[in-house]
Image (spheres, one colour):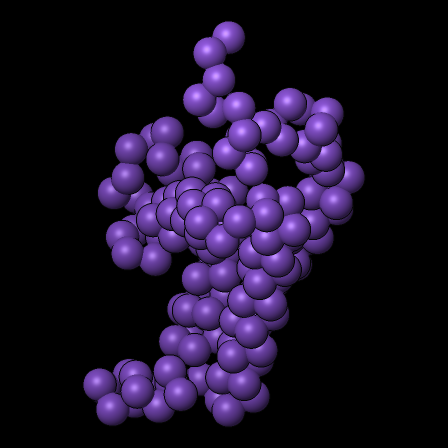
Length: 151
């Protein structure tokens, strides 16, 4: 659907049909990985507002700290360091190479880097579990009890 709307606006795939389908599959795999990270947040946070907050705090630097909107060369050095390790940058590089015949600027290629970083992130997130509320002392605030208590 997105490629169809892009076609209406004037975008043309400059590679083969196989490369375009591969680009769509890479994008869907990345979106699937991001959905699992959102599901993990949903399990850990326990409230819809918390999932939205933490999801936004997670996605904001990934999207705006990438080379989607501006070339990396025009950014300050500290931001270039972040952009060069950002998985969205690797995804953008892979999509541009698959759809527009732009050279892939990463030596190893973007697809293994994107997939490997997400798998490492999921393994790390699975190992780190939040303690139950009774351990942290936050159970008073979940039910509202104890908020007006004078200590």
